[in-house]
Image 1 (cartoon, rainbow, N blue to C red):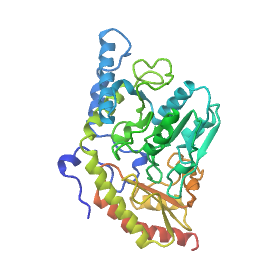
Image 2: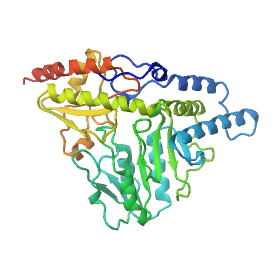
Image 3: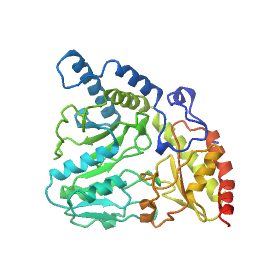
Length: 382
């Protein structure tokens, strides 16, 4: 049995409802972050570019938040540019890097988020899609000996199936050719140690217990990148949400010392789920790398099952999971990630553990899932 974190660590996490196993769909903010946002709302409401007292106060709060996030990520505060979402961060990163490089194609792995694939389609450049293997990992042999790309994009890990990507290895191949690497670290911060080989990094504060409305684009110092207008205060895309930025900063400070033991605990819990699924359910396909993976994610596909039906029945039993593509879960579009891997695209279910997930919630899922699969198959006449 995997033990829960000691109380002094577990108390840092906000409680999630019993049975909640959809962290990729959102989780409560850390209590410290909630308190920080409420406090900042009272003092950080003015334009941080103004020179009066209220503006300077707001600017100090914003600068402090950037410094806290930078410390957590191990970068300089000036390299951190806050945005309203990780999608916005990716789009600003791609457009700014391409603006500094007038020629060359965009290289993307086949399992990048749809937001980035779509941005590539509309960037006015040729797009080269790099293949992945059956675990969802980039095939490094597909990289040309002398690539002429303007930019390459690769996730730190795939949120949908959990597989970690060879970011540092790809960076080694690109570096002699001066090709920048944009890395999407969605679902990775405070879960795994981030790779070091990136040129630009996109992250979401909600992944480390902050608010959903704050992302960040980190641009290495010295990188040729065209920043959008109005980015002088470190916020890209309109007026900054400074209270949410403050919450993101405090969440980063809070999670920094406790995420590693929590990640080890989550890795063991997911290993239990993977073992239970293969032992108790026939005709099931667990996707993604079983070991070199995000610690808190597992996706599986069950033959002769509707993923939506499984999710609905589990919800009726008090268990919340997800189905469909991680980035288009609200559509009926088949998962492009599973398709690129050559895996089943129907009947897939994704479990992602929130911070502080209890043994009881995992036990409940393990008990119920065999009966749910059997029921759904019986309803389908099988």
